[in-house]
Image (cartoon, each protein chain N blue to C red):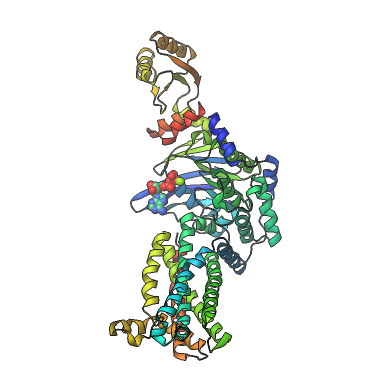
Length: 284
Length: 326
Ligand SMILES: Nc1ncnc2c1ncn2[C@@H]1O[C@H](COP(=O)(O)OP(=O)(O)O)[C@@H](O)[C@H]1O
Ligand SMILES: [Mg+2]
């Protein structure tokens, strides 16, 4: 008994609790005026940004692979596929940009499942706040995360010699389209995160969906070179439309059809998965 | 009107089932304002599930409950504004620092930027965490971790505080600190519903106790009433050798005709005796039979014995508890 107490004191060596301070702090605990839905959502967005600050690995994890691919494909196959590595880079980089960001959307579900697993959402759901604000706030933070990832890939691209004819406006338009699409895709992971709950299962499930989607697309090579069954899949893959649209933006063109398809898919995803997530979230 | 009720929390026949498992099976509670109420039960008894229903995190399958005068099923938002919870669940963010966690919650409650920093600093100081304010919570020790959890639930101090096993797994010193916090909360006027597996804890803190197991309330009352329901007096005997326990128990039942209570401590014999003369005779009988005693005392039954008598089974913790208190 005596020994355990001594050990405990030595172990954490923290300040004693003062009864007077405790009472003062408790009696100063009156609630201020209740904030609105938007203020609450932005506070949760701020939390997401803090998490990027404290756990920056989550950005590097997902950007490391695409950067590796960029280097590998550009220098290994660039010559064979497009005549020269720099020429291939002009074709590849918009696709890598899409792939990276779409992959990062997975973290939306992962973060959510981790929060639920750790009991964060029990705290959030017991607060007198606008109930969807943790989800909306997380999405706001995620859009910043997506934008950071895009910036990292673009910087690497420019260093390697990516010189898009569409210039800054073209690339920015492409990034905005990617952010819209990823915001929509993230709602899928929100629903999965709320339903599956174990962070590892969410990760596994997202991988199963995202790997075929991002690789069986027109990111790396022209689908015309693929077997017909694969071509069929690539041609209905939303990622293909997004890559085509972004590629066109980078070339200073506007691919009306591809952009329209991407926007319609994005709206549909939010319209389906947004309400489903809310229903799942409210159920208790 | 019901808002003015004397009861901070009332529950009537609460039921929660998970598949076939009736985790909470008809729990009724009436908890007066401004007191600590203890819900005592072993692991899996249904304590957490009960609190989750009262805190609007789970919808009951049956029964009804009011918290602060508001119905948990139909007035969830109002319930959320009169209560807070901490403990086994309702965690803080381990990736963030102590300050960031408290500022986050303060902002959610509507404190200004500066107001939330001030409130956070004040709470960290009151909870003895100032030195750890800018450290990520994942680097906190167990006791600090529990205090930041409780501090996070008291950014705004509402009428009603749920504490789910706030001391489970803590060393004695950290546990005493949590007890101080609970006492301070009540002297500040709050109503505290505290769940625990430790009988000593409920006895120390709670005005009234509900003993629950397998989702049902087995007994309810003040610590004194619960003890009295098991028997008016008990002779506690501590043996030098545990092998002599069976002989000692047999001797007491056969010679004095008294009831021996089951005990989770192998060195302990507890006989229901309220007459000191009879107790005296018991001690002499044991002495004559060459049974070596370390100590003996007359008194009320401990809550350990209350629990054993009520549930007829041992709790994992009652052994540790009697070790700790000896
Ligand atoms: N979300 C859940 N799903 C299924 N069963 C659960 C869930 N939560 C609790 N239980 C079960 O309900 C019973 C009571 O659990 P709980 O309320 O956590 O007990 P305590 O807090 O007293 O240890 C246990 O049998 C537990 O396994
Ligand atoms: Mg529990």
